Length: 359
Length: 133
Ligand code: SF4
Ligand code: SF4
Image (cartoon, rainbow over all chains, first blue to last red; front, side, top):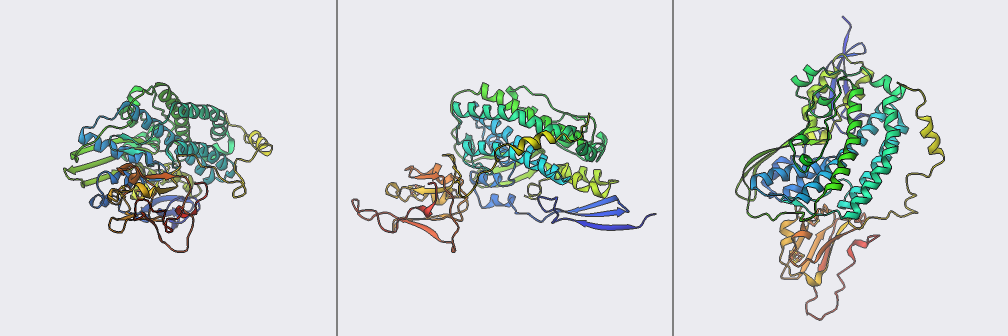
């Protein structure tokens, strides 16, 4: 038997955008086991329910993550709205859908960039992020923020997108599509890129299920699971197919995410065409009393929000299960038997968001 | 099918295209009008009800009805806009222009003129000297 050695990986590592620590047990160059430890960026956001009332919590939940901040805020609002039986106006639902899909777009572009960076393709990294910048600009124009949007409130949204703004956005996306094809084609077809991804990090469908993977991780192992199909926001009115792949490797996950980029553009187009006129927020009276589980599909997978309220303005409990947390066991599975040189790519393949995980 | 040198086309195009970045700071960044840069107050309309103080999630605002002052800790404010939405007199607004670095964390103080026809007091300074406001 080869000699075993333990190599610490992280919390500070060039490939990691956020701190997570792994102890990699190696036999020669092969990883036999990976032991994760998290907790470097724990902020105790869930406990803040004791100090911030349920309206202020919208702004707290937004800050769980800097990438899916809109969806975090929305998921929480949805949960409280369901407890209070607030009917959100249709226009607000559509606006939420558009912002959700813009979040997905920029998140997947961010991930593509980080992936390119992980295998050392710096120019491709720059290009992915250059494209992402346009989405961030769109966010700034429509919400006033590039990272934290603060447009959600219990009962609807705070800002409207006028028709000319929507038209402009659709035009920008139309223009971006060609560039996106060019860039994503490199990810999908380039020899060098493929040599790093094809057949690497296989997560068999059984393992994916057993380890409770979510999002693109699950879909790349052949399961058509997507919370958007539950029809929250305006997804019930829009037409889209769940993108899956049966290859189960890093390449498949990249393929799924790239497919979702174009799907998001399509969903935004549909929503912009169908958006009804009307109010953007419903009036909310009183305090919530009851509990609710809300499940939303974030770029990284399914997140859920559990809210329990007691009739006062302070909630009893707010619990968030983020997709990265659910994907960590699957990631550890893919690390087993992997080459040491592939570890960065395997970690990135789940699109880790550590701050989300630790809240 | 995989291809070698698939990036060449893009690389060549880049060589001859305009840079994607702007030459900051020579060329200033133009913010869209909705940018949440900092909170501004029209102190003349404020009735010192304290709604903004109670609403503000990071408790960045202090309102004192007795002395007629409204204070904001610019570096505590997270630009969420909750105070703006809750103000009954609509005298708060959130406008472009980020708070500039300062040596000391100090509150920005606004005082309402005591008499109805008095001129604007000297303390009322332009919020933090922002660019682009
Ligand atoms: S909520 Fe408006 S009126 Fe009331 S104290 Fe604040 S700024 Fe003044
Ligand atoms: S914008 Fe938000 S953080 Fe800033 S003063 Fe208003 S309520 Fe407080």
